[in-house]
View 1: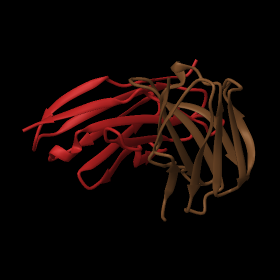
View 2 (view 1 turned 135 degrees about the vertical axis):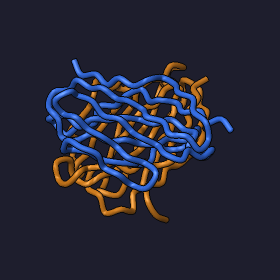
View 3 (view 1 turned 135 degrees about the horizontal axis):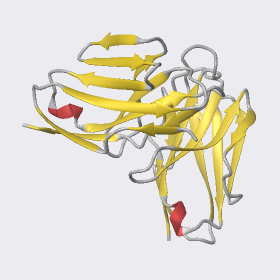
View 4 (view 1 turned 30 degrees about the horizontal axis):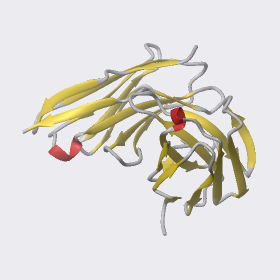
Length: 109
Length: 115
């Protein structure tokens, strides 16, 4: 079957760096997405990786290793507004998104 | 209006009621999706429409009935729901899967409570 695993919850301190990991097993691969979802709001698109390596976008970076079925989202200089759930999703061979359950990130002052 | 809009934002309905959820996208996309989001569970894909044709129906109970009259509008008709159907229902749109990255853009969701 298809499976996406990510930690349920993480806690970090304002100003610090946090890495949220995602491992996947899917039928085919057409890219990996990270979304941010604040409580009570819709998910918003953060990043897309289809080739191995690191994609940097401001304070957020996303890494992919296709051979290991592994990705991480790196958040630097954490701010209180980064408190949210972070969703990992993989597009399979049928171009359908397979979603993880999300990682709730709690930022403490 | 910009992006993806959904109405209503909140809905409380009895098990014998009939109601409809509406979604509209203003992004020029040609694929639209309905998802169900329950607490601490992955997003569940319910229906996919691409170029106004349904291309995915993930074993969703018949009490949920989608309608896509054009590439900008999507409806989810609800009837004789069960309490376990209470959840956040999200609509999303994208370019046709396989054309570009295919990132999906979500509406704010409808919080549905079935009593």
